[in-house]
Amino acid sequence: MKIIVVGSGGREHAIIKKLKKSSEIEKIYALPGNGGIAADAECVNVGAKDISGIVEFAKANDIGFAVVAPDDPLVLGCVDALEEAGVPCFGPSAAAAQIEGSKVFSKNLMKKYGIPTAAYEVFESIETAMEYVKTAAYPLVIKADGLALGKGVLICEKYEDAVSALGEIMEDKIFGASGNRVVIEEFLEGPEVSVLSFTDGKTVVPMISSMDHKRAGDNDTGLNTGGMGTVAPNPCYTDAVAKECMEKIFLPTMNAMNAEGRTFKGCLYFGLMITKDGPKVIEYNCRFGDPETQVVLPLLETDLFEIMKAVRYETLGELDVKFSNKHACCVIMASNGYPSKYETGFELTLPASPKHNAEIFVAGAKLKDGTLVTGGGRVLGVTAISDTLEDAVKKSYEASADVKFENAYMRHDIGRRALTYVK
Image (cartoon, rainbow, N blue to C red; front, top):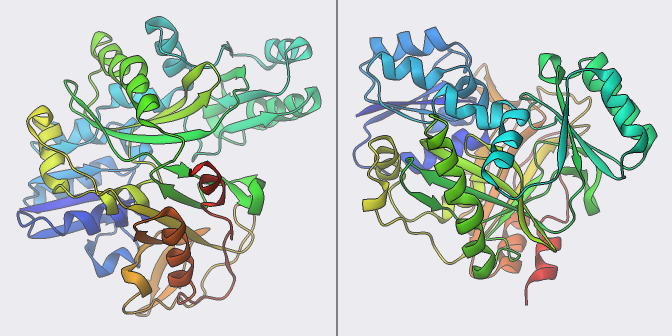
């Protein structure tokens, strides 16, 4: 079978590398892919948001299945358009993707169905929002309603921070129309956990938990990024917490979406905070997280394509989805200056055989006259697997030392926080 994977980042590279192992797949096209993905799939110059172009390519090339990975095309209805054209897909419909496409929708959903989350208020005008933050308790969190490349969440320590954040989001429109409405919510405390899950609307199968590192600098300093590294499993996510999440969050969310006529089929991401009052939802994503995917999928033992088909055809409950009991660490190598200003176009040298059998997932790179060069803020992720978290971290850093490009930057403490929770 010939398939397409829509997207161009490290997440898509991880998905493609896993799908390549399926005996049923004869060819993978990446739309648009990137210079590193080109080693594992045929890249086609069709943008991830070019819905009509994606459908035309699928129809013209006898595509038997499509994986739509990023949030933008999902919210724009890429799955709906492909399915209408007769191409079965892994990924939610536009109606179901609203769980990420609108923070207001997701918060109201949780409130309506009693799913634990932070207390919140919604504002459609900057005037009423400014009035509210005068008397609000700090710290607080301000979120742009729509998609914002994972950067539309601002933590405000004091009133002046909130005024600045509201001005940037609602007045300066740094996130465009996504900032027409904002959610202002209470600040939750506790360890964060990311749990990706497969769901077909009837069954929820959580994947291995993970811990992301969002800040640009060591010791969680600097600006928020798309993610500077991840480890899996997350030691804060105990069996007891997992059981509570299934009962109070995962199944209720699936059932809530069904009740709203928005059945979710695909990868549903739960961003959780383990508070003193139990686990609460910080956010939902309607797709695989990035870079969480780069540590979760390498630990998956079941054929990913079999799972994706089971999700599409609503037979997930009949499948035994297995994960390794090992540990994984992914270190992101970025362009110095990310997430602000940075230079690209530097030659990128990857080892032919990475140390410790590590996997390299390329995110921001392109081919220039046959040479791989940097082409983004987050350039790639290096993932290593081992029997212990400590050793996985060590091996990931050792493997990343063999990746060479000018202007390279990484955090040096990925996994350190997680190791403090390891007994």
